[in-house]
Length: 62
Image 1 (cartoon, rainbow, N blue to C red):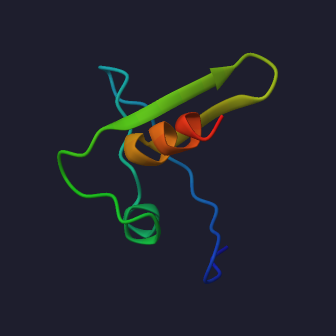
Image 2: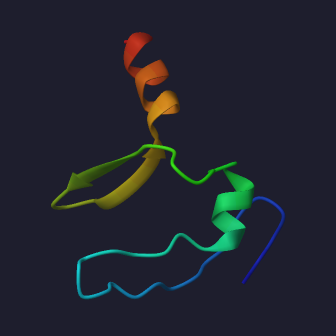
């Protein structure tokens, strides 16, 4: 399923616990090689991946 502003895709976790961020996601969120991402976790709600600059910007507003 793919639309202009959303998509669903599955990824596999490799032997070192790594995943590949799909091309569609990298393009949509302008994720470049070498960028730092934040992985947020909540046992009940799951995982979220956020670009670090966006994360820190949100935290500054609080």
